[in-house]
Image 1 (cartoon, chains in turn orange, blue):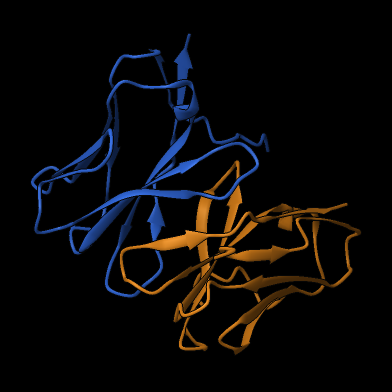
Image 2 (cartoon, chains in turn cyan, yellow):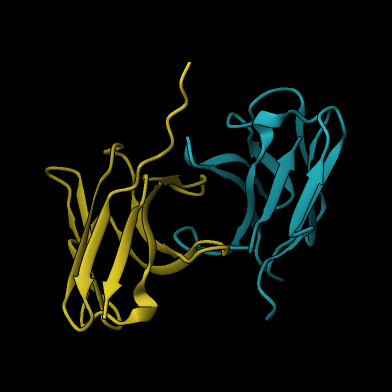
Amino acid sequence: DAGVIQSPRHEVTEMGQEVTLRCKPISGHNSLFWYRQTMMRGLELLIYFNNNVPIDDSGMPEDRFSAKMPNASFSTLKIQPSEPRDSAVYFCASSLRLNEQFFGPGTRLTVL
Amino acid sequence: GESVGLHLPTLSVQEGDNSIINCAYSNSASDYFIWYKQESGKGPQFIIDIRSNMDKRQGQRVTVLLNKTVKHLSLQIAATQPGDSAVYFCAEGVGADGLTFGKGTHLIIQP
């Protein structure tokens, strides 16, 4: 199994631009999670899906952030417009069992 | 105002010694706990988990202890190796919800 796949691995963009991060969960997993990691705040849950349905998006910072999961094998996290304070590493994780989440390699986002 | 980065506690141990990493959790309703290892430039990697109805669980070279009375979790790594150098996070979960992560501990293995 290839594990959780995220793309791009690195993204550098300018303030105001739209950014789309992508995730392919492990095949057969029914839950998908988006996390953000910064030096200031550590690892934070942004949103998670169960069976492609968003369950809890209370961690999404503001309306500039949106996430979709159109099918069981793909999810996107979009930031529009992006701001420098959005710079972070964004992780996607998937799980089948409640107490075991597998993380992807992350996307390092830099907003100038 | 001045920005302050996240200062991770650091644990430095000699190669071959045992390591104990501690974590205090906040939610008494959490029903499982997980330890993750994160190496530089990589995503968190699952190490071991424990359910709230247990107080000890052992894996390969690792043992997790749970003390619900004081909401404390520890990870013991036996005979540490250079490859154990990483940041270790504890995480707590409730049902199918996302995880709440601790701040992390940086483990450094001295040769």
